Length: 488
Ligand code: NAD
Image 1 (tube, rainbow, N blue to C red):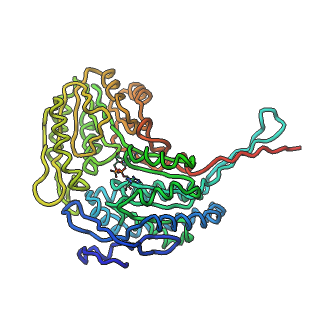
Image 2 (cartoon, rainbow, N blue to C red):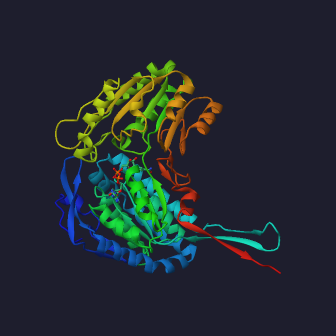
């Protein structure tokens, strides 16, 4: 480890290397920046800062390693990934504590994210030996149609801070399984968790150049030169819709392949025949996980008027019981990622109450150190456009009382976004009808959490392009090669 950490010695032993990882080596960047703990505003560690020079060095390494990695037997790739999985499972304490220190999320959530991420890695390891192709007759019958999937080439993976491990594993696992080399750019708020994962890959023995890691506070200084370089064949991005659009523009000249996981405005619909206890319990998880800073969070809780009072009473009681505090302790809700994110919430709440929202719980920042905000509930009578395409990304729940299922469905679909949606009902036919008519990439039926390695994760409209995880997630990193074969 090169850089000095102001962190107490307790956690120092858990820290990853804080340099950049290029061509199989940990290398110093030209400067450093500090990672802060959002629970107390104090520095956690200093990490190396990459510029365009390090970005291009990473691409040199990724491009040089690409042919060898693509040619490696699928079983050999799978073996390396299995080894990485085993090493990852030995380092649970480091992953969970470091994730909590830099992201603020409660340890229970860090542990859940760690276990799910490991499961993703294992699943990608298993799938890497199962890439399929096809061999069939042409429609004229006089030649054969052979289709083979081939790795697309070096990929840039840009990840956000809110799920600092899962977002990297979901991209890198799929890319590596497909036979692509990777350059991961971490979010400046959470580089350490990404570094722990890359350490695992290094220790597992991935060949030099297959995995590269960059940290920076000036993301465009790193991504722009890469997006302009024809050797880069794909960008896979998770983050805001604005930045996703910008990256697509920057890659457009090179017709760069892009997968985009962007913002969300998740409707959480509770119909009049729903199990209200289950709906209230799942709404709490879906809304307050990660202090509401999740793209799949319940952004608009839309409840049939006939059960709204019963739902709201249970939901508000649960919200008032949530324990807020430093994620290292036994708490339910941690801090916002930064003072800036917390400070914007006063204005957000004013916007909601000016639009007719009634404050039922919370509503203020928590006094003292750290960037905490009280779990908050605002209730609206009927639909309200203030919350259409307005991603709160905060521990603020908005409940809407609406007249019946058609009104609920219409309000749910009034959004530019189309990522996650949820419906609670005891009627299977109604559930499936909603599932088909909701204009969203994912529908949780009687559940508020959906991520699974087997399931294609992604959105429609302004929520993005492409899918992550599932077999589909691996093929995002592959191109189809068609061969026409004359057979005598
Ligand atoms: P963000 O777009 O600001 O940042 C995401 C990543 O992009 C970070 O690594 C950041 O450093 C980088 N970045 C920022 N500006 C850049 C630029 N000009 N050029 C290159 N890279 C740049 O988003 P955020 O605030 O970190 O995350 C919140 C957003 O991400 C929300 O809208 C949320 O819904 C979305 N999100 C989506 C998913 C999903 O799977 N769909 C998952 C998590 C978060």
